[in-house]
Structures are given as structure tokens and as C-alpha cells.
Length: 257
Image 1 (cartoon, one colour):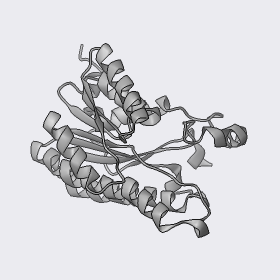
Image 2 (tube, helix red, strand yellow):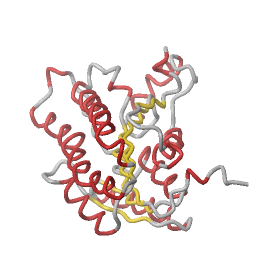
Image 3 (cartoon, rainbow, N blue to C red):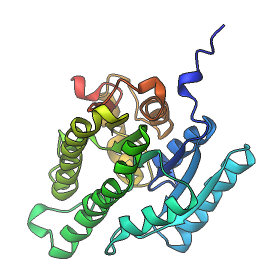
Image 4 (cartoon, one colour):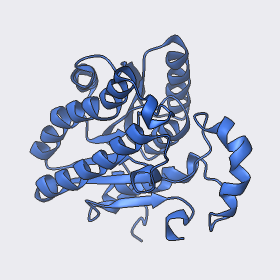
């Protein structure tokens, strides 16, 4: 009998997951490693992030997988180029999961040049550098997967997240653009959009708003990082080889109401 899970296996593939030291990035890194991929676990380079990334790497290795941690602050110039070079020296990248981002919550009238530039640098400029550097090589090899981690904010922007929501909308536009460009070369490009996911970033907010928000979600609960993992594996594997240019919401049905 044919193995029904063979198309999900990633043996021989290498994945770079940005922002993989905890939460959504960690969950995706672990499931890709569990499917057989070597995983480059990116973190922003602080001591705390390095410790977290080392824990993820150790968890993968303890389970028999291959992983390495790579620190890089996405706010600095040429961050994407530097990270791509470091990871490629370790192993050519077949799967790129663009999860790292920052959101600065503030009234749009209070946005400073510094806050604007930092969000653009982390959420878009470095993303572009990684795409420019890594995707053409995937196309040359005839196989590649790109998954951008979006947000419900790309379609339902929060009033206090003007810049963040705008970067997520731009990222979705890039996903659609690149899916058209590389569709005939074995490379798929998709956007995975979480809904209300309980993470460290929003945990304090959810203490006061979580119950009311969950009541508006058809699934009746907030999401967890692990809720994203299965969808990511589909889009990163041969099981999803005919899915490209898609914006997949993982939001418990929130966008349906």
C-alpha cells in the first residue's frame, strides 16, 4: 500500500524559518523538522533570543533531526543578505518561511519616523532581501516553497496598527506577484494568515479582550501556535504542490462572519 503521508515528508530539504525561537515560528520549525527537513532556526540575536533558539535546536536534535540557530537583527542594513549567506553556507535553502515581524501599537498620529522605519525594515525590507537571494536558486533547482506569515490585519486593520497592517497587506501583494513569476519553475508562494492567536505578543491584551473576541469566532476559542503548524506543513511539502498564490486564513472562521 502506498504511504498516504509520503507527500508530506521533507527528507533532504532545508527550511529557513525566520523568527523561529518561540510561538508560531517555533511550532512551524518543529513540524518541518518532524517531517524530515533540516531547519535553520532564525532569531534576532539578543541573548534571550539566542537561548530560546538553542532550546528549539536542542528539541529538534533530541528527536533525531538536524537544526542550527542563526542570529540576525532584521532592523540593520543588509540583514536579509547576511542571513541568506550564512544559512546557504550551511545548506542550500529549499523552504523559506517568513515569520519574523514586529508590530508597534500606537495611534497613527503618534507614529514617528523611527517607528515607521523599523517596522518597514523588519517586515518588508529584509523580507525582500531574502526573497531576492533565495528564491531564484530554488527555481534553478526546480523545487521550492515560500510561505509568508500574514495576519488578519491585512484585511481587517486595527486602528492602532496602521504600519504593521500595511506591511502585511504589502506582503500578501508580493506573495501573489511572485506566485505568478515562479509558478512554472517548481516554486510555490503562499501566505498563511493567522487570526487571533494567543502569543506572548498579545497575551496581556487578550487578558482583557480575549473572552469577548473568542465569542465572535465561530470556533469559540482563540488559536494557538500549533494550530498553524499543519497548514504550514501542507504548503511547504509536495502535498501542497498545486497550491500557489493562495492566502490561507487560519482563524477559526473569524473572517467568515
